[in-house]
Image (cartoon, rainbow, N blue to C red; front, side, top):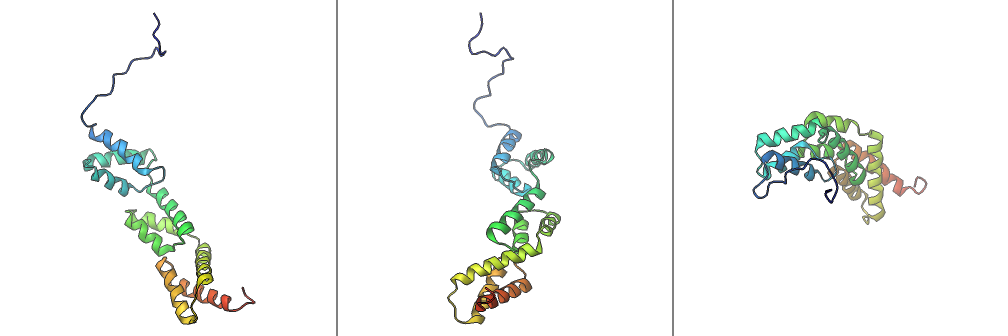
Length: 180
């Protein structure tokens, strides 16, 4: 007699019930779920596994398999991080480098990702930030406003020279109706 429910393939044993899964299986299950669909640095995933009390050797072995399969790529992460944070947060190179280092990305990958930042695009983004700030600025003292603008750009990781030059230029444009 034919069985209902189809499938004449081999029967699989039911998964074992009770008890924790083997450490490697737990690590394999946890690491990609930590990613949430976007690239994550290896060190962040490793720390997450260690917090779940996965043995270091097991965590490192599982992460290496993910690296070999292309599922974890610090260079890809760094590039995506720089693009996203520069575009959405308006961050300059210094701030981007600081964030990547804090996330455990190796220095050569940080340098590589930051080298892809276009200086003209970085300057234009700084100008956009200053223009936006100038629209809502209510300060009559030009020197005070210049310091605030330079400080804002510095906090966002722009170099001192670029921050001062852009703030001074845009402040001059705001004062001269022919340039606006």
